[in-house]
Length: 209
Image (cartoon, rainbow, N blue to C red):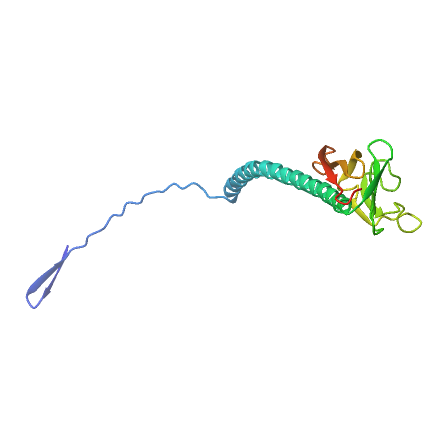
């Protein structure tokens, strides 16, 4: 220890040494390969969860779509059959007489006559050449227009809905007639499963003799 005298005063300087303790920290090396492995696992788990959720939602969605398609086809078939019978009933109520001509199994032709000569003829069923599975309306001659006998109107086209049975039965001569119309449609497109709609009614000829 050394001293210093200035103007009779003595100063003493002391030196202190600081000792620092060093510590060693052990760290796990961070590598790109470790991070990549975690990412792949996370992606795999995410894909599995997404797949489970997708299939869980897809099953009821497909079932609901099929049910909706079946209901739509049924409604269209019923509408076609009802419109066909309404057309026949409208003509019949204004007619004075009718003629029934069976045309093979489940197929019939009925001709309505009116006093004004504006009657009509209806053909339906699976056995009419050129009109298979259809319900068609003609003029009173039942021949149709042109060389091919084109009908005045096709009430059921034989594609979306098909006429399986068009039966006409006389109840009272020129007064009451019974009509049975069976229409089939594919329940679900591509399934091959067919469903039938059956309508039957008795029509009164108000002007019948």
